[in-house]
Image (cartoon, rainbow, N blue to C red):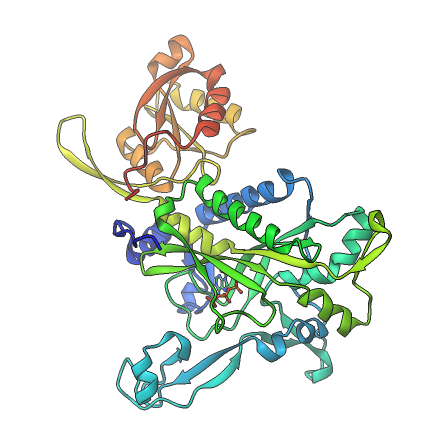
Length: 462
Ligand code: ATP
């Protein structure tokens, strides 16, 4: 295995959390009431970033692939779904409590000696025995709170895909191999929510289930592993901060034939980002059994051969990807001001395809007709790009604000613009500036996005 690269240490969870709040990426849920643990709200920049990550994943999965279609299934599903999937029985975490300080731990994530000695790692108090705790949120539909009306908030989006697999084959004439992609909310009653938005009770997933003929599953598994790794590289994530983790026999989920996680080196260490799983024919066999419906595939091109497809799953957290990209993009850089003095800037080096704002348009001065021209330039750009407009404060300060929001391009309207309809195009990463005609701006920015990342490695890459 490759040696663990030293983390640059520029992004700490404290810095990321503070920046996220200061700039309106992520706020604590219900903050005015003291906050709600396990839930977070996404402000203007965060909502835009989340939507752009989702749109980029959706494009990669559905638009750029021949055989993957999309789905948007309901969060509430028939409760039998969760019996068939094994969640009612198996979706548990081992839980221990401290009798003294009431702290709660996941037994599989605490130091071995604390468990053996039954001693709280925080206060030294006595720990309870380990017990299994089901992570599904249970509620009731209708006015009567009884077992017959039980529903669960889905703990993963995947099951919505499995129960619709037959509908999609019939309505869209899909032929195996094919995939179904879905983005949506999932809920887990996590015992410990820590590290900002890394592990939360309400989160979003981007899942794709690929249905294949048994016997071809290992080949497809390999192919999807490669594609998912390449996806992160395309987003500009340094390969040195990505690694594979294969599930050992004790770790393998009840449904899995083989499973790998893509892990990312977060400031708190290596953690799972996405799971790529060979789920065998477990899911469709179980749903067939529990629903009484024949979910086997009929291969019309092969003498109507019937079989239960194997499923290769790629399961990424959308909100966890957002945290990863904040950490990956975060940089602090020493720069020299015009007067020769040293200064620092905080910059989020987002890939332009996910940056919340692609272009900010800034009039050099708040007078002499420059704001009017800047607004006109913005109007011309906004059909194609997400834009911002800012006229408050010195131009250098405004550039810093945009750097901190991760905006890859700034357009400055100055006095020369009035003479020859050209503007300054400033690049976030290099801080270089060049003159471009207003009419050429959309084409130029589009070309810059397609050519990104620039050939020189980002200074944050170890
Ligand atoms: P863990 O073992 O860390 O609880 P998991 O292996 O159960 O996670 P999966 O069920 O494979 O996770 O979920 C797929 C993806 O969904 C994860 O890789 C992660 O990105 C995301 N995810 C899972 N649980 C959470 C959560 N509580 N908060 C945020 N994202 C999550």
